[in-house]
Image (cartoon, rainbow, N blue to C red; front, side):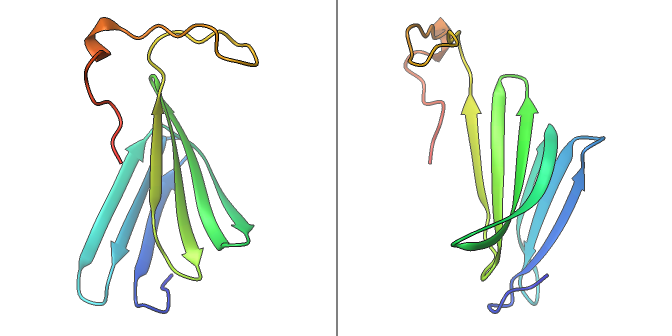
Amino acid sequence: MSDNRGITLVISFSGIEGYFQVRLKNQTEEVALFSQEGAKRLVLRQDTSGKYLYCEFELGLAKTSAKVPVLPKISVKWNTLLNFGRVRPTHHLREFTVPKWCVGRTLLTE
């Protein structure tokens, strides 16, 4: 699949083996490769911004989602939430314990 800018999207997915891979190419070369293990499900969705592939991952303490808009133009958005500590299942946060090795470190970056 290609968009009107000449960006081509090549995807590989296996729910059984648990991986999702996205390659972006222009007319002459590969410009980006995104790959993640722990893939649980891949769906095609549509909203007001256009059509996109949405993949959910679970691997250890990390929950990741990948959104790959395909129409009107191809792009990639990859987000990970790390669950360090213990969160009680209530409507609001009452307790959150961060392991000592995490304190003072940058765990998530944009």
